[in-house]
Length: 300
Ligand code: NAD
Image 1: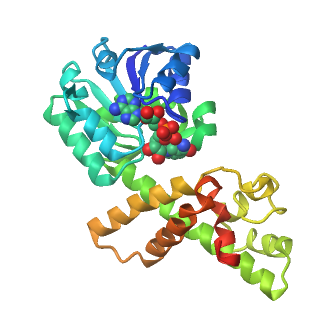
Image 2: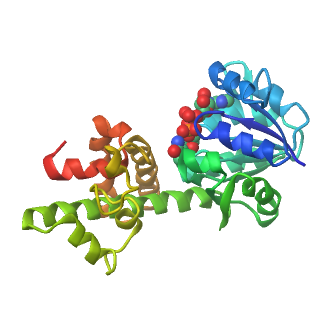
């Protein structure tokens, strides 16, 4: 049994914290949004009056599940008279950040944790809210071998796959690279369906060929952007997510930062970033990201 402060009880954090508690760990939660802390309490989770109180309640591990790198670094450091989590924690506390943030922010968070006498790992997830609820998330972890070994049982209580990607920041690197592949391949599949339509090819015929040929990929066989061939894909429910366009746009923004940092020639990734920025500026923000087919078909 590990004592854990779980901070950030939003769409992902609350079900993750509940699964951790259900696995027998002593979890105390907190969210700066009072309604989220209240919802956690109603759901049966122990909650604290502040993040620092949660961290000071005798925990060995602090898990954060926030939206942005600025929120993670701000909470670690503290600001505007609010004490930082790193200063409040007992020496040697293991800080696990599960938020999706930039690789360089994750590395800065590791460095801050270490400088304060703690241990830090990045452990972003894929699998969405359904994965968080069903404890079937995939964790991509950037950590030393020892810190990975310490974190793995906790992450395994919230997910199905826990992959050690390397040292500081490399969990975020894996996430950003995977989602860039996903964005580019979802656009390629959508373009192929629209091209097929114009050439008189039925959706089903293209699917039957490509899903058994070298065009096969997740964006086609699971997230098929047209209704029909894959009955469970978001296209069959008016593009309700799934993985929302706003989140894909956010992740591609992180990819753009990583591309700028490294100077890689990633023209396809950057074009995908631009298309998803346009998509998420409109109604696409709340749609599944496979709805990008509308942008391609008729510019909306
Ligand atoms: P969310 O906005 O629902 O939850 C984040 C919570 O963090 C909010 O309730 C916010 O009040 C809280 N928070 C922010 N700063 C805090 C602080 N200093 N102390 C305590 N609480 C604080 O977001 P979400 O959908 O749960 O996503 C969380 C992260 O997971 C994001 O980085 C997102 O990109 C990533 N992610 C989300 C999904 C998804 O499907 N929602 C999938 C994979 C990854």
